[in-house]
Amino acid sequence: MKKILLTLLVVFSFMFITTNVVNAEEVTGEQTEQQTLKVLDSSALDVIDSTYNIDKKESELDLSNYDSIIKIQESIKNDYINKIKEAGYDTSKINNGIQFNVQFAFLDENGDFPDIHKINVELSENLNSIGKKVINVSYSSTSAYNQTDLNYVNNKVSSIKLQKFENMDTIWHVFDFGESAWFEKTNEYINNYNYSSLVNDKTITVKAMSGGWGTTPETTMWGPTVKLYFFKNDVLYATKDINFRFIFGTMLDNGTPVVMAKQDDNTEIYKEMAKELEKLGLDNVIGCYELEAYGDTYNNMSISFSIDSKYNGRGVKILHRKSDGTFETFDTKVVNGKATITVSEFSPFIIALTDDDPITATKLSNNAQTSSMDIAKYVVLALGSLIGITYILINKKKIKKVKKVAA
View 1: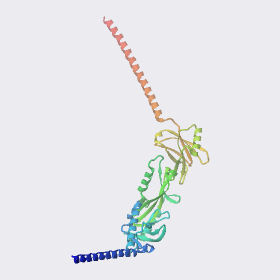
View 2: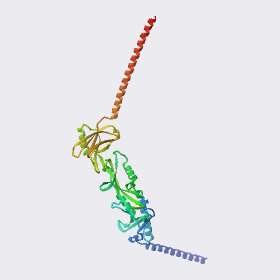
View 3: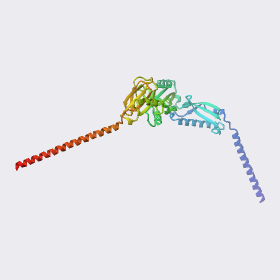
View 4: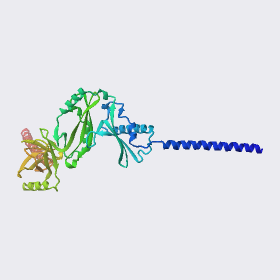
């Protein structure tokens, strides 16, 4: 019995020692493997190829949705992290102390629009760069690039003629005062604009990406810069910046936009113009505006002020302070919510009502007509009654005479 117990003890002791030795070797092996991981430095970028291939056509990029661009960047970033890890580098600190930025290069200094053919890759720690690399990006259609198409597209793009504003090609759109949901309508206009009409060529595909907004409605003019991308045979050959400018105002016959900056009653312009109106015996002001043209002006320009349609049919006087300090007046009526006059220059205008409410006047006129009609009816009835009574009396006398003769 003692021999059996001794034998079992020896066996278990051997198993215990063997197991711990194996475990010790595994732990030692793991530590060795961790110790052999390479430090993440600039050499890690050497494992990244100089060209990244995207399996889609260049023209298939959804440039109108910047989120789609971000998704592509994230996909490329994940691919590169896996490559660096497979090359034996310690990637555990990426996004945990070390930043790994993968982003399309920018086409301009403002950094609003991506260059779809280049990717900037950078490793950094505490805002200090560890390493940088520029990667070319190719697509399934890139090999179709050729000089003939390049020249063709560039000629078409250079032929685009738009109004200039601040030395940039500009597309203007006018909103009436009081028009609601201007922000939604602005975006709808930009998204639905027919950009292909700018080159009028079915062989060229035009895509647009909207950038930052330089102005807001509070400054009477607003709108973003838009980058246009021009593709032929699914290859990108040219880009072009244009401005969209939205205003509250009007557009002259020659295409010159005129901003109408509405003046509150606490502004100096309003106070000065209102005093001049008082001299004319008017104080029922319905609008005051400062007008500024962004283009060529001429004599006898027709302009329309947007006025609430509730004033339709009402007479108004429009007072205009000219550039020489003198004043001129115009008398007109509100038609379809607008008061229209002809001028030869722009500066402050103020508008006041000059007549009574036409609705009230119409009611009074109708009442008067009704009263006249009622009186006429009474007169006719009275005459009819008088004639009837006279007729009866005469007939009675005749009957009496006939009876006497018969008797």
